[in-house]
Amino acid sequence: MSDPHPPVSGGSNRRVLIIAIAVVAVIAAAAVVTFVALTPTPTPVAAPTRTPSATPTPTPTPTPTPTPTFDRAKFSNDDASSLWVVANKQRPLNPTSYEPNLVFVDVPYVYEPYLTPDAAAAVVEMFAAFTAETGLQMQSQSSYRSYWSQESVYAGWVSSLGQEAADLTSARPGHSEHQTGLSIDVSARPANCTLEQCFGDTAQGQWLAANGWKYGFTVRYPLGKTDITGYEYEPWHMRFVGKALATELHSTGIQTLEEFFGLPAAPTYG
Image 1 (tube, helix red, strand yellow):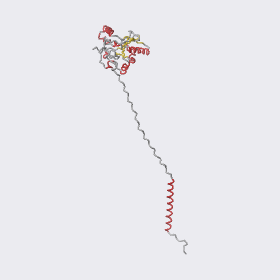
Image 2: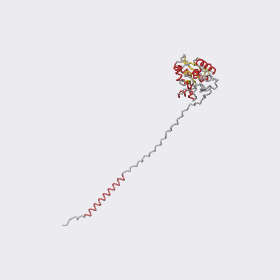
Image 3: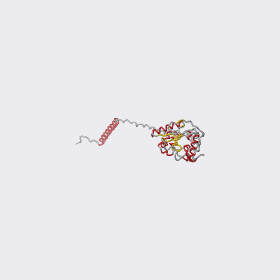
Image 4: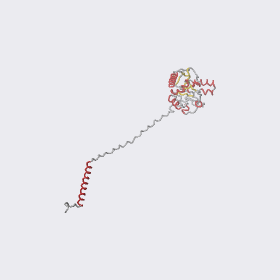
């Protein structure tokens, strides 16, 4: 008896399988392409542009203002009428008969005081400041002396002490600072250690040494400087040099005019 369905050959089955696989592959590829096409492409974000930092400008260093130097040649040391005249045993006044312009000094006194106008005004201011600060008083013991007055004063010292000792205490005529109208001898009121070295220990003497520079004065014959000035310590002898020089002397600690101006020491008469 014969089979009702003819047998299917093996080659036909393989062709069908290959075709089916190819169809599936095509469909899969199409799906991938469609997916990729439908996926949104991200918008590229631009990288931020870096602004270059400005090169810092260095802060300029200010040029320091030079400290002005004190002009030591502003006034003459030789002219008898100069505020900075230096009279000593080696430096007589020029001229020796010099007479300054004088005014009365309105302060308590022993002998009527006269000085140059600027020196007189400074004395009045200084005495008033001392009294205001301490409640005590000072007085003028001696101020301007002419050449001829100095002759008499010096002769008196020579008579009482002898010339060698007198030369340590009193100037010979023509060499005295009192003749310039710029120097004043101060004493306590009431009198205490008048024209004696112990005046430096009194309230008046200590105040003058500490504060005289504020009013333009310097202790002209300080302690321990006899070999330079030629005179013993005289804490009562105040010399007016003006506030500028007095302040400079105070600031530098230089005690004598000879040292400050670079002048030769004058321990003896030439």
